[in-house]
Image (cartoon, rainbow, N blue to C red; front, top):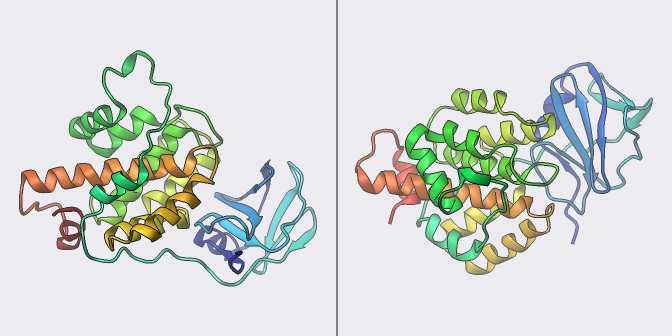
Length: 273
């Protein structure tokens, strides 16, 4: 069942002031438009909501290089008005409750395929956890960004999950996360998704999966996992894997030093037993 049309916060920000740009990528399920420094995705209502997404009943047919103009709060592509929805999607805050990581690991059962070469001397999870221990989230993101296949490489999706987990738990600093994204050696579309993850927003099924795990709702969690598995080749599941590693690492830190001064009480309630 299709949900009503909506736009993400990036789209809302893009049309909030006059600007111009162009269509930078066209795929079967989405077209990407850069307006000044903001990237938005035009797609149908059969796709998931997200911060970059403008979900439209009948997305316009656009071509690579078509000029995009925002004027008076309206988006024009190739001289034609794009009828954007007015409702702005926002992910619901994570409810306080049971631990996330344990149930998420049981539901997910997925490991990304990354081209790690000789740098991988152990499992992906162990290598990521070592990177987090050595240099925090910046080191872990640098280790995976750009690796693997896909429009957003699998490593970028893992990094987005790591950034999202830290943001949702109220750990670290948003400016630091955005600086990590700004330095990431990846393309503009992937960087846009990473930046919104650093702010605490990703695609809707991932937020639904995390919420279901907090509430220990097996049925809702499995449904959200199915929706994630339909996104990209493995992008949705790779995102969830990154979030799992981030959540699990935070739980380990909390268990090693209670109370952890860098963690909010809300974060501790969500990630520790």
